[in-house]
Length: 238
Image (cartoon, rainbow, N blue to C red; front, top):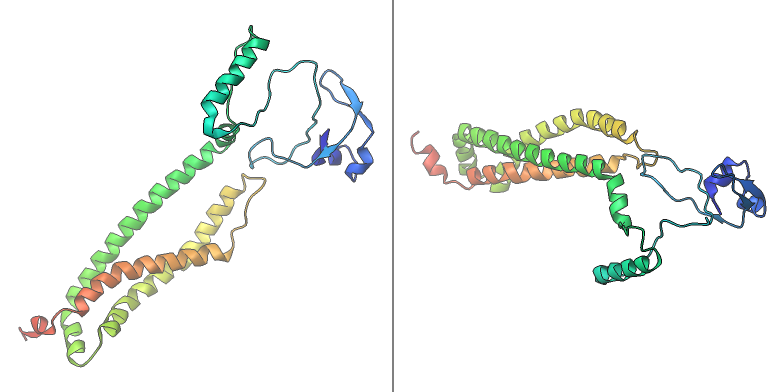
């Protein structure tokens, strides 16, 4: 049996054309007719393209794939081991799980993703501290201005919006500058994969919305404290 990629590699335009044809493979020059074609499946990680695959029986077997119920995996494996030792007592019984094998293929990518998460969290935390510190400094500088606005009838919502406007503008400018760098870096990383997703505008839309939300939460908390403060305390020295 062949997969679709093997059919294409051998020069056939469709699976029907190769059914019944006799082929020879280089492994011990085994020959036989093609009795079926299966869909392409990955034998390596997504960093590699699809490869031709030939499925055929041998006169000897050294591996087998068994689907088991994971709810009672330990007892099932023990039964399999006993059956193996009854048939092949001179050979060592070894086993592995398919999900572990697939996980090893992407272990490096998972490790890199974990580092991204850690450093992104640290960057967000430091950024929030910086925003809060800058907001506190500006609130201290504009204490009397905020008090006068409240005395003249400005609402808390108006003061918070006025206070946050400059921060939002800075965040938007920083985001616009960061988007090309992020897009280039991510595409450069995805070049290592034969099968990959496309980076669309939705990713950056979610990014700017998340960034603005964090900015509003950080700056809004400090500006709200300044907006609800008693204006008498700020103006009593004047």
